[in-house]
Length: 403
Image (cartoon, rainbow, N blue to C red; front, side, top):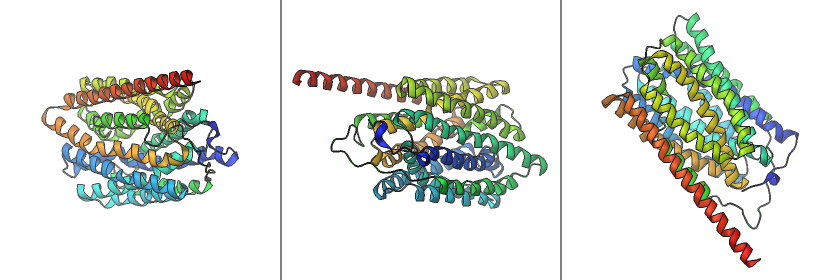
């Protein structure tokens, strides 16, 4: 594990989290203007639920192959900002093309391009954040960045509601206007500063492919097989009777809870450790998805969307901080790339499988299936913790015997 000496602390480094937080805020402001509307838009173009799952699986999954490439390349050249700018820039220019889409194939192309941008920027961005703060504050830093991301996700649906109201339900106009906040995010990247690279030590406390990192990645991949696209939650809400114009509103509820819970659980993980919070995230996700499967009324859906936001606080920032605990700074972008690629590739069968089960057996069993995968991921993670603890105990005994 890395300690607090891994980064050169200064005014610029400490501000990186805030600057990159604003980048995420404006980008999510743009993304969340359109994301909740895409399922209904696809259905209006004649797409089935299987097609929705296919689009999300391809867009989220195949684009994530680039995360290893961008992460490894960023580590090799020792630069983060150029990858961050290219990634956010590509996503910005992709979104307005939804305005022109006439078939689901065009929507797939836009979603794929947008996700490629995310794949390029995310590993270098997370690596830059992890080396911009003290080693004991990584949970708080990632929690703050994810909270600002979610604040943008609150404002995005609000803007979409305003546009839909004044344009009499013109969804395509929402897609076109989403370009504006996406472009506003880019100048903040220029305000961030590269952090000083540490001299490599002769002995690493934790290698890139150490057992802890590998097992955590495997657990996350298995969990992701049941963590299908959130678009299916919106479809579930529509099936429960949620009107089209209230889709942004229920998405706001979810994101408000995300924004509020992320800093809290991030700071909590700095105090009590990452593992207990990660364990809670697996169990909590299973519980929520079982309830989604059992729900059949609109008020239950509203309550579950709010409760689901807590899962985001338990997982997103904590997972990033945990990887930073396991992997040395010079290899973190690569590690984030490997982790996100593994999880991202699992989204391809996950979303397709969820759509197939929903169409052929029903939504209840689709949600139960997801809950089951989450529990398997939890058991793998728990087994990994036990193996690490046993290894540490054995190492301690060997040192005491030779001391």
